[in-house]
Length: 210
Image (cartoon, rainbow, N blue to C red; front, side, top):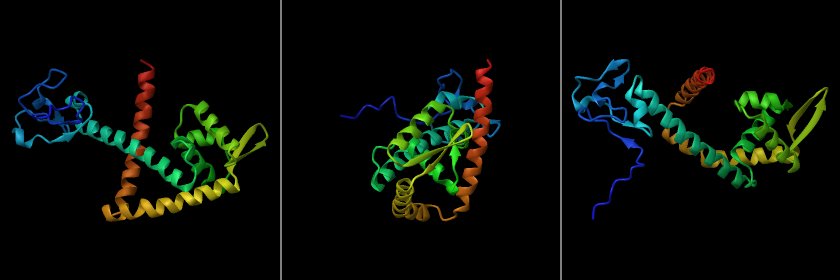
């Protein structure tokens, strides 16, 4: 018996002779600023999406990128937790791990506002809870200078970060080097992602003012 296709399937093909979820013909989707109406079905790009209705307007490529961001973010979060678990700290969340790495960054003490701003965490309460958790575990130390509290890694925290680096070198880097021959692409992707973060921040402020 043929298995029924799941409605949650994230792969969508939008043929020209069907309607999208917005009620507009898929042949009217704009690609690269140009309408696709009149294009043969075979020339309409195949896109892997999680929200086909968002690709029915201008710049459908952005919807494809957003799906890539979603799955990449989830995969990255899962990876850092598993890597840190292998390094000896299975109870740290991905936010804990990112804060620990940045607290150790360049061996400089950092205040809560610095950590939140650099990593673009809006909820300082979550950051504060994470820092207190790692203080209790002996991975971070705090020092009050004037009115501000500064955080840095302890010897145990520094050793944990080093063990994480070794697991990362062993498990991740060989796979990256075999799949991405031109590592300059990584720098270019990173630049685009930083630019996109600014665009999404600006759009969020616009949405908040509506």
